[in-house]
Length: 327
Image 1 (cartoon, one colour):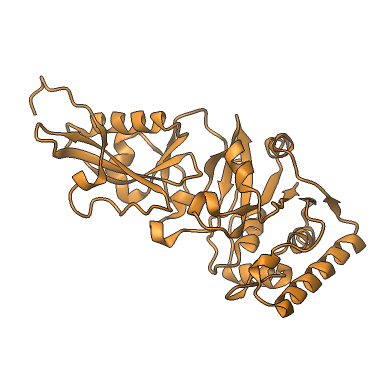
Image 2 (cartoon, helix red, strand yellow):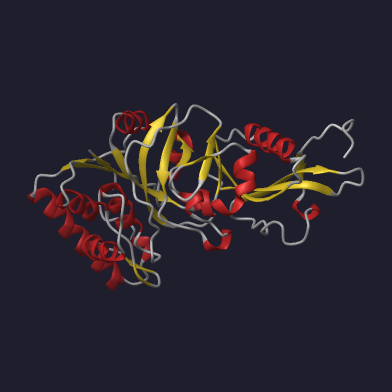
């Protein structure tokens, strides 16, 4: 390449990349995009593939191809694109060593490297890296990840059996807010539940009166146990400012969300919020989306803007809100 030609990396359509360079863009999933340096004929001479969850401010570099004399220019293009999209963080897994080097990412010790594009959010708590092994154990995984840096499947299933009250459309279901509060307290945490539903929730996940009656009965039993133990429950929706103050003050939060904003389908889901700074929260999501080829780098310690997190944290119609503050 002649030195008189300025190397400039710009966004290009995925179909302009070599075949197989990028995963397909699914209409309801993460945004897949590409940045490339192109030749006079428009063909890519160097390129990077980027994946970004719709609700997260981290861009994961999943593909990289650049001759030695183009790596720096391609890296500048990736940073420019991430900045244009207001992303807070760049990440890559060890298989993308060339991208890690060119983008000057730092190893986190968590099976990925990263580079903050804003003031870093410190990892305050040694939260575990573990993804739910079933479609219904997000609550146990969120809670166990807050308790210790390692989680076992034995503990995941045991806690689910202890705290679940839901019978889902296709069989077993997820955990109830009161059941989660009881499980957290049993494990030595000081916990407070903010919950604005006057009666049973998640009844829309069942398909018969028999199942509705079962869910209602179990949730009533949990609620009575909470009252007997004198555990703290605030009947209301925790304001974003109060959630921010709690997490910035060192607390963690387990938040009930609807997956519609992230994965474009309605499903109740528990996530762990464990650090915050300047309007961004660090979140661990127990769920890896297989259709998007996600890895831990897509769900571990991901930054989410407060206003987005707050919109995520509503389930049902009318919307109900549940958050468990752990101190």
